Length: 336
Image (cartoon, rainbow, N blue to C red; front, side, top):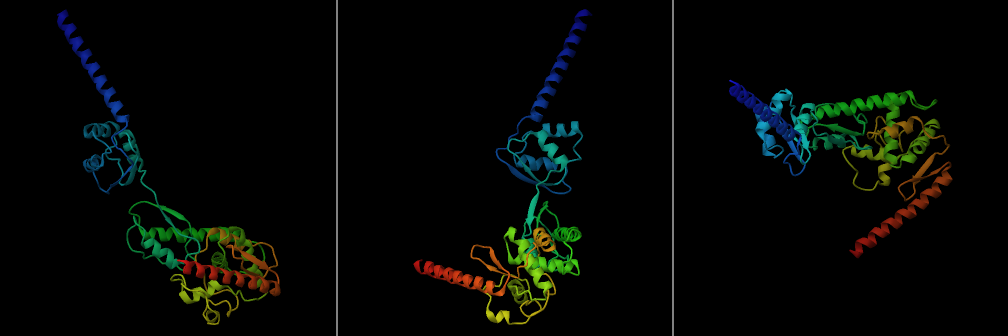
């Protein structure tokens, strides 16, 4: 009896040791680096069950032991918690990290960039061409209604959802900045501020100049002077459907449209682009100056003036720079 008892005890102890060894081995394999040689993206479709997910992970060489994967899901109680989506897995990722990532739904975040100064037509065209989004655009968005910014999305999001987010972001931004506007501005409404901000956005890409450019337009509005800004003339011709594709001509300035600020008083009837937050902020808090004119300086910025005589000198200087640029381009073309 003693021998039998000793044998049974020995067998039990052996089984315990074997079980412990198996648990230790499984735990080590669960957390050990996997077979994936390089970062890989895998898409798990909605409604995919455990076996379908397992097949995709095996096919992509993210895991190599289906038995261990199934056991891990069972022991952790996560078999029904794996989320669909687009996942980017790092090289040598462990089973533990794979499950953790999929339970948390840490899917790939894609980005759509709405550029400052682009028209609504241009932004929506770019959105239509963006991969990873689905469905046609049915949401309505007027000119100036979309806030230029970088927007994150996941594979399969609807384009309409991004349009709504851009529109909501513009509304919130304009509302917040309107509350902090400088006193005495010649604006009756947030819409008028948005119109001028779109002009400021199109006139300069130099961040340090925005407040000064805005000040020139604000000063002109206060003095009942016409804005006389080329981007509004261009918008009147193109209706925001793309760049003009040629230099602005004198006859363009003399052609009456609702947006030609050389011929109309005050602001045009609507925005001419989608201004960014910085342009709106500059328009609502312009620099304090009595300048009334500006013209390009040949370096990407502008030179400002308080009087017409000073401005005309600056314009003559700019014309010389323009001629020099044209001559250089012609010489370069001939050399080629």
